[in-house]
Length: 331
Image 1 (cartoon, helix red, strand yellow):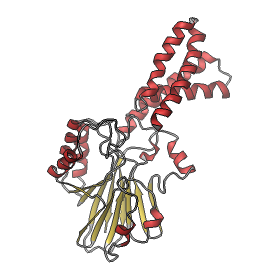
Image 2 (cartoon, rainbow, N blue to C red):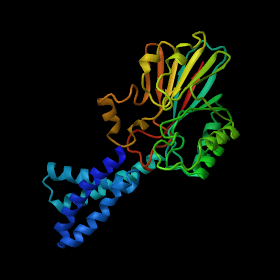
Image 3 (cartoon, rainbow, N blue to C red):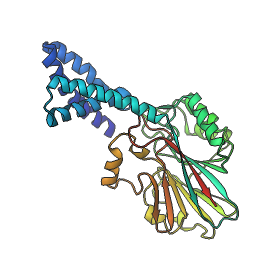
Image 4 (spheres, one colour):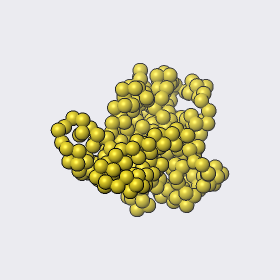
């Protein structure tokens, strides 16, 4: 409902602005009205690159008109060029994933290597071939555990693509742990393309362990998978953790970190995409939308690591930070 409301507002803005421009330069009010209406319909595809391109154009051209002495036509031309270059650069940035590395001293008897992935949103910005290449990179890390911290799929994922993504991720040569993101549950979809039973069976057949409000302990290391989209209160689960273990909370959203910092050693999350589209990261920071919008941050003695994600939602474009997978050595 919120997305539909935003789309409607953008539609009105687009229609008014493009009608003004078309009417000014086409000199035919009826033709300007029709063309503006057609262009403005992209507002109802807010996850498309074309919508992003038009939104940049509108904002940049209006800014140029107000802060420069350019004539309107020149402002429109410059805004068009800048918008196209931003989107092209954003596409390249989205597909150029970085390796981010952290190392922490622990009291673990044996060293462990973790690899953190989140926010793939398959297949919105990733092909089968590209994901296979990413899995190959991850396998070269020789990790003990690979953490899938949510939003591996979303409401636009078909049943065939759901099966495809987990078959590819099932080729990871490590123990794979997975927690739900807000999109994995398909709560934003109008009609579900597959059942929860089919989804769970796909995870099981590819040896991917779902931690659904569950604790998994192996020797002196424990993983706590939080599903905040099923219920709100996980306090009992977290407060009962064995403090003699090294406890790692995996929660898609980086929220409530101060509340759990006395019970865990590490918190792993995604969700924010590092903003994905400029200037969203700075808006998250200014308004304190999340406890940790990107990177490493300490809450008492607990370290929080939030990844910008291996890809992003909707747009095949990233103009804020970069795509990444995170490697963590516990020594």
